[in-house]
Length: 480
Image (tube, rainbow, N blue to C red):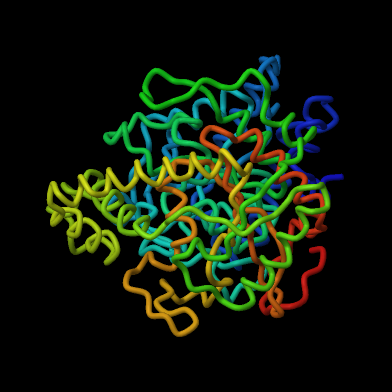
C-alpha cells in the first residue's frame, strides 16, 4: 500500500483515515517520498514543513478525531499556497522583500482547515504577491507543468496545481483574482474552484472588504474539490464578508448531482481571441451536457466593459497592498507589481466610479441571464500551456493584446461578476497538453455548480489519468 498511497483520491484517502486503515503519518511519509522524487523536476513546493506536519499528526492521533463537521479530513496532508500564512512556517509571497519571513499566525483559512483535520506539509510556489498568469519569482524560480516540464503550469496557483497533478499532495489551496485557481487547473488537467466572495473566510487582511481575491480548492476531481470546500467554508468574525456554511454539505452535491436544464455557451464571452485547438476541444466538450438532458444554447451577457472594470479595481487593490512596499523596495519588486501599483495610483475618482458602476451593471446582466439559464460555460483560457520561460501571452491568432493580463480575459471577466466558477478538464491538444472548460454558476450557487461539474466530469476519463509522473516532452495522455 505505501507505494500506492499518493495515487488515492482525497475522498478515498480520507475514508481510509476515518476507518483507521491508514494513519496520517503514513500519508505524510508517502507524500515526502513523492516530493523528494519530483521536486528536482517540478519546483512546485519550495517550502517544506514535514516536521511541523508530523507533530500535528501525532496530536490529532492522540486527541482523536470526532469528525462531526462536514469536510472533516481526519489527518489528510495538504499543500497551502505561499501567499497564505501558516504559523511558524516561511512565508515569502514569492517576494525578495519577504524571502526570510516566518509567519507568526496562520491565516483564518488555514486555521479552519487544520481544525477540520487537514495537515499542512508544504507551501506552494507563486509569482510575487500572486501577480502573474505564470508561476515564477525571483526567490524560487519557475514551476514546471508535469504534463510537459517544458511548459508552464499557469498561475498564480501553479505550484499547488503541479503538486496535486503529480501526486505530491492530495489537495491544495489556491487563491484567485484574475483566474489564479482556474488557469492552473486548466493547464494541469485539474478541477479548480473559485468560490463566491466570502464563501471561504480568510485574513485578517488590511483590505478586508476586497471582493476580487478569494481562496478555494484545487483537486484531481470534483468530489475532492467539494470535500475540501466543506473543510474551508464558514463564517468568521475577522472576515466581514464571510458567509455561513450551508446546511447541506457541498460534497453531497457532487455525489448526488442534479442536472442543469439549460446552459448558455459562449466560446469567447464576446471579448476574446481563441487558440483554434482550445476552440475545437471546448466546443466538442460542451456537447457532452446533452448526455444528461441539458439544452445548450449560445448566449452571453455583454462583457464589453469587463476588462477595463477589472483592471481599475485590480489596480486599486494592488495599490492598497503594495503602496508602502513600492516606496521602500521598488528595486526589489517584479515589473508586474510596479506596473499595476503605479497604474492604480494614477486612477481618478471618475475612473473608480465608472468601474464600480460597470461591476454593478454586469452583475445585473448576469442575474438576468440566470433567470433563463442554470450555467454559463466558456473555455477557461484562450490558449493552451506555453513555454515555461514565457511570462505572458501578448498575441493570440493575430490579435495583439494590450496588457500583461489581457490573455486572462475569460477568467478575469467572470471575477467581476462575483459568481462562483469552476474549471474542469475537457480534453487535450494534439501535443497532449490539457484544456479546461469554465462553468459559471449563479451567485452563491456553489452546490449547483459542483453538481453540474460532477455530471460533466463523469462523461470523461480524465480524472483517472492522475497523478501523472512528470514528462520531459509532450506525449499522448495516459495514466502516470
